[in-house]
View (cartoon, rainbow over the protein chains, first blue to last red):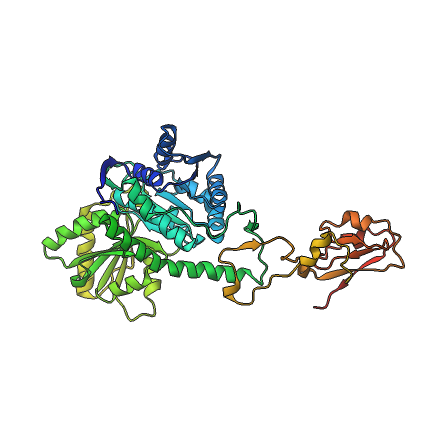
Length: 395
Length: 108
């Protein structure tokens, strides 16, 4: 094995994604530009123009077509990628079901952007979380490094269980913010991620198949079970791939929930993506001041890491769930999922939902401190003031 | 059912219905394995066309109109239905100028 010497580059989250696509030796990219995703596919186009990669690039007329073309490419056995955001992801919705239902290991980067109206291009998780039931796995990146690592691991996980993966990063906070990213030399990426071995291909002319064919009520049910089981099986694969990544490249992803100070915390902050970077910073500060706090950063939202969540819930008195998203008529989406996963278990931590950062509203260390003070009061008094709090609301 | 002269010609002999009896027998992805030779569509049918040869004038209008096509011409010149593929749409019965084809509820 070649010794691992990382290549350090200062890149945006979007460029980190584009480099990962090149290093993963993706064969087909079909995409349509949308803010704040555009610089991912521009960078890929630049790699092609410079002769640095032989990716087949398919410019299409909409996101629906982008996903359709990616599905077609993947069905021939190719490693295929696309990227989008917000309204673009919503337009893909129908095709997302086709990709997962046909069991095609496509990887897509979604740059979390608020759904309009009102028109907004800023960070908000509702676009990707609204695709919860499409059968895609979802990985949330905290920083640019995790965007790069996430895309590489996503291909390996997807191609092992034959389920597509959405790698999610934050609009602007990651997509357009430059940071140091350790990249992996090509020959080492090749060792980690060998060429795809497809289950079936449209180009195997001796064994003809049709993809997305009809299944009558006599057979549809079984195929749904197969997809459900693939998601369950993926949990083990995710842990193995995350562990292997750590052994090879020094960054361990064997936990689907990254935990900090959980063992001696009264309560933890739980959330997805870049806002957990702010939380980690704040937790260090709060602990230095005597607060017994920790964090639980949910890396994989689908499949949902219910077992790991239970381990955390059994140790702490409270969980502050931070949702940069909202399911209208109910509550924050991660909060809803977490409560559902714990129902029927013995774990009964006090859980409170803080709706934060919608549409790119700044979420700062000061905000985390205010939440910590509120949670401390709740735990000491044993009384939950309200279950769901619109934290930033101008009152 | 006389299948000696079907739209699939000699290949019809290879036709074999694929039935999955347990979850393990299913392919991992929902692809149709093989052609219609292993994916019979006749079991979608509720009403089956029945041909009365005493009324048939061998005009072959049913043969032309069948969208499947699941009507074939036998060596004796009369028409017959390939029930492995006939979906029971009833177009043949509707078009038949002598009412030689009737749609009858099928007992399965």
